[in-house]
Image (tube, rainbow, N blue to C red):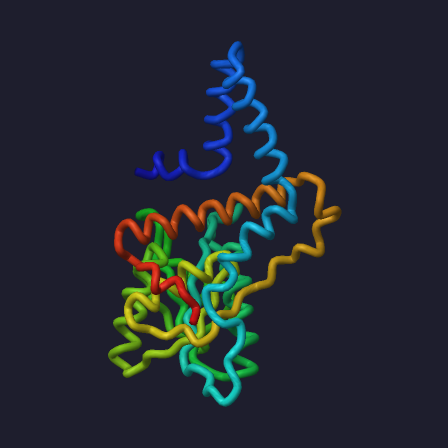
Length: 247
């Protein structure tokens, strides 16, 4: 299954189109396939194209609490990975750190209690939430959910805890291209995502925006992965189309 997932992610589909074109290069169809692959490689490497592709993913929940609406008491943070450093210790990924720092800034403005959700991948790895809390020195500043391995599992596990507390409204902290799927997963279990906070995409730092770059292709690849994941969640009924609406 993991191999199939990797095959579906960029750049593998583009490589497949290119290979088909090269195998049929003596025919008009083959030449068109090679041209299509080259065009897509270049187009998806443009930072502006990557940004535009992510726009539908960024609107999965309000970016601020509405006027005269009380801020939710709980801020749910979904981790974005950990890694092993050169000394053999585990550290939160840059994505995880950005998500938590963004949640902390929101908490300073609006108050609330943070719940960090993230389990472990692999038998020897610690839970992502535990690693982040230890390295960032969160202490009693956050409650931890230590078993979820996916966004859907985070929604199930955290929702169970929230409903025991009588909570049905949350603020959600994650990466901006992950907001629509993450918010939909919580809505699917009856949790209202009142506001979603995320680190901004620093598109203005890409110079120039209209020339191919590795960062541009990386942004397109992240968006492609999210669209595939949303489709997979819909097929497996982890979310439905109504959950994807932010209204």
